[in-house]
Length: 158
Image 1 (tube, helix red, strand yellow):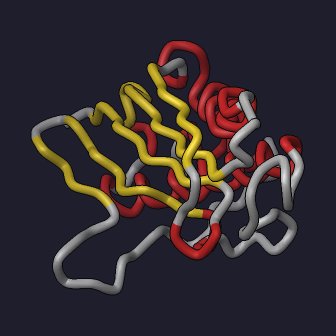
Image 2 (cartoon, one colour; image 1 turned 30 degrees about the horizontal axis):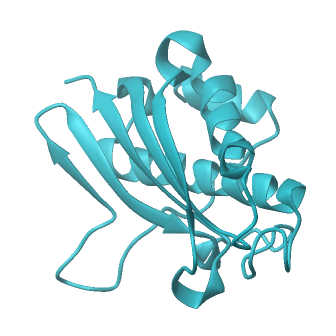
């Protein structure tokens, strides 16, 4: 078991199934050199029934519920990273996270929702690897009325 997986276990986190896309024309991640580009992970694909998978933030679901959804998406993304690189200890850096938040037009705290993912990456990988660049944007809608979708870029050790 990798050091990262040991940390996940200590946190009480079990990795879910990775994102595997059913289409032959796209994949859940692409490794180019040492950079792993991870496709968008949307809430509708979560196995965790305790988080909100549909709805608009600040209308159908609260900021706190959306934070929990973003956190669950980060856990699923870690599973996808493991699926593509084998050992999570190969992750040298969480480089960048993009979060798209499906929210009421007056909602202005997209950054706080995306903290659910950022906090998780920081806790799991530590400050040297888990601290990352990011962008959080509000959108008028996402596929299947998902409240949150995240994508990520990771630096991978050979």
